[in-house]
Image 1: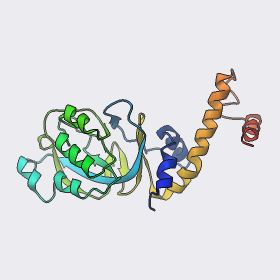
Image 2 (image 1 turned 90 degrees about the vertical axis):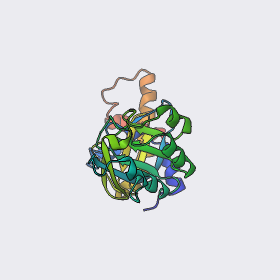
Image 3 (image 1 turned 60 degrees about the vertical axis):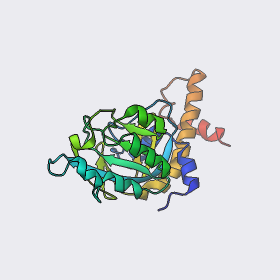
Length: 232
């Protein structure tokens, strides 16, 4: 299922917290990527299809500076990234080897990549911040990726922060982190997410007006009726 501009606009108004609630009601409990935190505060909420990259543990004969010139390299993968995608990278939670630095992030910006999300870390953090590429990661480190990881490919299912991510699954990232929407549940989230946001905004207004929580959150029958009436 393609991600239309209308779908992007809708999801841009739905928080990751709301998305996790909507998906929880469908039985999905594991959609929030652990370790993927905004590198700088105040990043806007971003939406895009996942472009997946995968690292495995470092192996000395493969994880070398020479590997950066290989046909299977992060450099080559970046040249395959389509405009508007979100690069989701499985770095196995390794936090002492930076998977991307300022040069690679600058190239991603030039290619129109919407964001980088990883359960690992970046390096050259000042330069990365200077590229203005939105990044969600687990921090930063000076050593390069080959100090702790071997890059093995892109465009295949990965695990990022304990979440299974398939190519072109939908990713939404904001100040609470990054969540995944399976393609098969996109329509459901598009339908239920905005309504969940409206309902919770109404509840917040009730709380601000002095309402007690029992019967309000979650709603009892009387509160549901008042909420329904408020939408007419």
